[in-house]
Image (cartoon, rainbow, N blue to C red; front, side, top):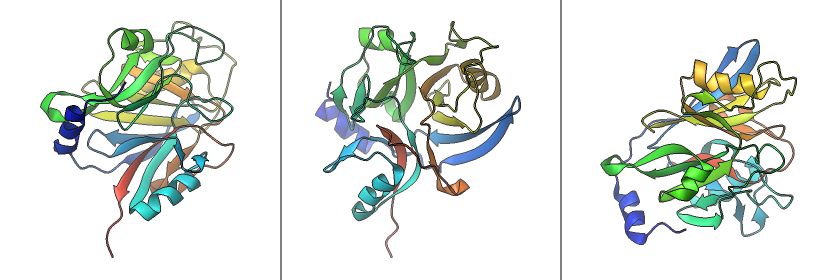
Amino acid sequence: MRVPLGVFALILCLPQIAGAVTCRDLSFEDAGYTVCDVQAGEDLQLFWQGQEGPFANFAALTDYLEPQGETLTFAMNAGMFDEDLAPVGLYVQAGTQLKKIVTRDGPGNFGLLPNGVFCTALAGDSGLAFRIIESRAFAADPPACWMATQSGPMLVLDGALHPLFRNASDSLNYRNGVGVSEDGSTASFVISNDAVNFHAFARLFRDVLGLRQALFLDGSISRLYAPQLDRNDIGFPVGPIIGVIEKTAAE
C-alpha cells in the first residue's frame, strides 16, 4: 500500500495545529503510570531503520535526527518485532507499506485476537486524525494511512475490554500502549511504571482516561523517551519506534 501522491501533497499542505506533547505521571489502583498526550497537529512519525540498520534505541535515533536539524521530543517503542528487529504485522512509514497486515490468530500477545492497528489517516479538511482499528476490519476496508503499526491485543474496543482479560490474573508485567480520543485529535501513549495485568492496564485507558479504543504495544521491553520528565529509558534493543520530532531552532 502506498498513499497516492495527490494525497501526500494534500497532507503536506493541510494546516497543522501546534501543541506541545504533554506528559504526566499518575496512579491507578496502587500502580504508577506515565501518560504522554500527542495532538494530531504534531509531527508524529514511525522509525525503524537507517542506512546502518535498525535504530534499536532512542540514542541512535536522536543521533540520526540531529544532522537533519530535528529534535526528538517524545518517543516510545511502537509494537512487536522479530529477532532481527523487523516489525510484526502491518507497518506503514511515511505513506509506504513496508510490512503486510496479519489477520490470523497465533501464539503470544500479538495473536490474541482481536488485535488492531494504530494509524494516522486523513479526516476531511481537518488534517490527519488518529485511529485505532481492529485488524480484520482494517483489512476488509483499509484506509489510506500515512503511518500505521499493528500490534495486539486490543485493550479496549468500542468501550469494551478484551474478552479474555481477567481482573484476578497474576500475569504481571510492565506494559505500554496507545489510546485515541473519540474525535481522533489526541493519542495517549501510556507506560506502566509497575508490573500490572492486562485487565488493570486496559481499565486505565477506559475508566481513567475515558478512551473507547486502545491498543497494547508491548510488555517487558517497554521504553519511554520523555525529556520533559527527564526520562530516557534504556535496555534491550527494540524494533519500530514512534516519536514526535521538532525542527531545531536556528542559532
